[in-house]
Amino acid sequence: MNSRLIRRSHVHNRTGVGDVRLARLNAALLRQAGIVQALERTSGIRQFGDTELEALRVIECLKKAGMEIKDIRLFMEWCAEGPSTYPKRKAMFEERKAHMELEIANMNRALDMLKYKCWFYGQLNQGENETELRAMIPDGLPEDIKEAYENAHAR
Image (cartoon, rainbow, N blue to C red; front, side, top):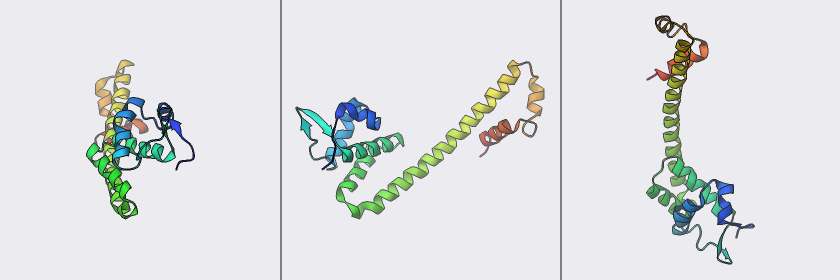
């Protein structure tokens, strides 16, 4: 039993999970996986404790990490099965972490291209000559712009 309970309407402040989404998906996932057999109610208001809040945080993390709902359900089922599924859960998180790291690297390359182009067009807007700017690539670029340029063009 959790030591403190909070209302569903206050869950967003603790987890960042919106009330409508919480009501539709996350609470259902919690119940289906046996994490929450029946959320406690006070005067008809659903109450969440520390265990439920942590489970909601994990669900929200996995959704943001691009995990499909069927895989989140599988994870929640593994949680309900207990410690024997720790290796499966760790492997799932390792795979998702590797996926996220690759996505972040790709996003950083895109961000670096934007940084370079913002600098490039900023220079042009200040009256610099385009041919002279292109001749600076890459060794004549300012160091931070050179790093961005090189990362954006890395394979």
